[in-house]
Length: 152
Image (cartoon, rainbow, N blue to C red; front, side, top):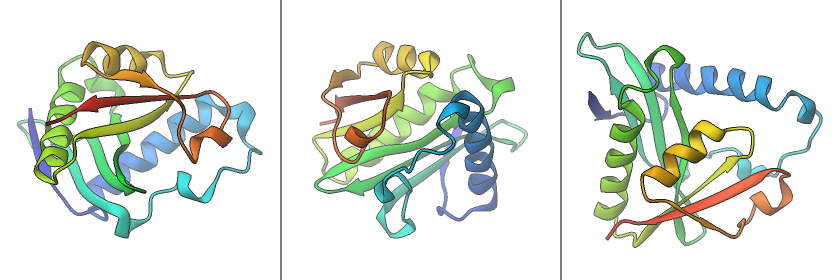
């Protein structure tokens, strides 16, 4: 699996983020009216790394990003297309983003996920991420779970 660095607005990256949004809208359909905090969205100028996982044929099947949030580097928009899950794509994406964070001088990365994403929780815990208290802005979002991993 090849993970390449791309721009945030790369068309394949945008398409994978749109697919992720559709899937999350289904998982959290009962929260459709919830007023998410502004920091929940990702401002392009906060992104320090965007990675795409591609098959050997060049098909983009996974996405991950790293953004600045306060004094932290936070993993955002990690997504693997359903037909490619369970094949090491997510692990390759995490390895790539952790390397990018270490190169940027971070001591750790943080992330937020939701309680309706048990597959993501299992992945993060298996890959050495540990639960931390819910941090802003996610303290305003019901069902948030937050994790960290040292990358030095």
